[in-house]
Image (tube, rainbow, N blue to C red; front, side, top):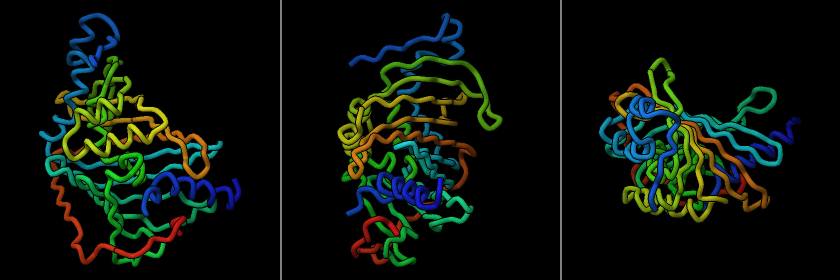
Length: 281
């Protein structure tokens, strides 16, 4: 891929990711005999429905994210790393955009603060002063902020599992040296929105309308306490600029549960109120 193609790919990510949007009864598909179901911690659907509540009880953790986007034969990945407070539903992540073919970063890392109903970004570019934050109302985003920030809010990702319709227990494995149970299934965004917390109800309802399909295939890895250690979800929507389908695979890793996660939101005076240049550069 030459530099021009890579920059086009980067702008695809910007258009459908970081820079986008600014301006019935469930049945478990059991993977085997009853003994295997016991090892899996019970009905897979019921276990996954409880995952978000279990995170709230866990308090906080470190988080690592990756978001792979593919459209028109081009694939790029955005990565993030930080902490999340599940009780307050506040997170702080440093998000790194893809490098150019020569290995040079085309954009400085972006600091993102995740909060109920809002996304704050610093070092956003696009004419925003370096010391200012951009605030986005997540309920106004067509994807409910599941992909806009280049990361999926870890608690919102867990709340998507409330909409699990079918799931199977795959087996035991390890994530980062921790023994986990691997589940595979499909969630429905409309169901998730109905069952979500008040803060995520509107964003998930927006995603149910904005994505190409409300079905979200996933692989979830839970430890013996029922806490998510790894969650990979696959979304699909249509890029409004290019009218082309975009496949997004979002992966969240959660670890070091219980660590301090002091996340402070910006003061009103530190939030940029001016116009943001289209295109993100």
